[in-house]
Image (cartoon, rainbow, N blue to C red; front, side, top):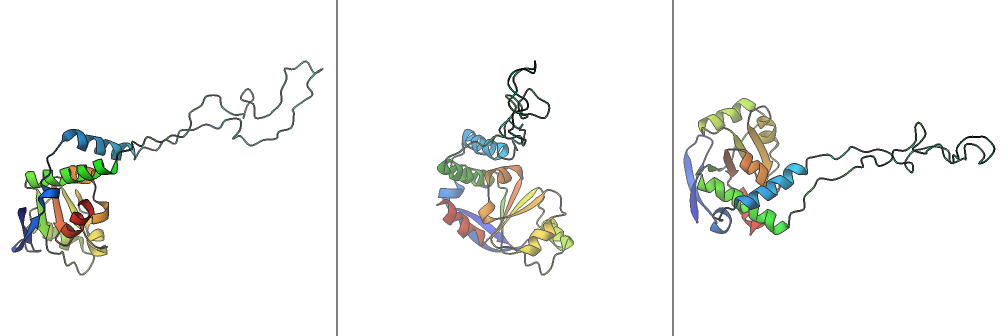
Length: 206
């Protein structure tokens, strides 16, 4: 197991914690990370381009005029694609760009992403932020003391003070353990985990 120092708000070491090798020491495969990151990115696309077919257009089903004797071509519906306001032939339809990835592969990629942070020495553990109110300046001072920027913070509980205090700090994002994902881990250079989260991450990925 890898040993990591647990820091406090002042940037001082208060204890030491162990990171399980089964999660934080997984061999990294770029192809697996690429597959999961790609699936996350394409899932954000909205395939909203769509046209109405004649079956979707609202309108009367009454025959426009009699079949014979008018000199016009036969016409049965105002919703015909040949008429103004009618349906569209072979138009685009709403689609999903999602790529399905097996749960085991997602879990493996998450282990690899965490392992990459351990390998790069860019993973940090803090005992708690202890923010008594929503104060961006207070959180900014803590991060300045820890000399951390371009940072993903993983919190174990619904810490509203931490979440709201981080909103106006550039390149800082706060997520809960349940929302931990490969894209965010790789997107930010540094990873800061609240000590209580390690147990939950271990339980989720074991």
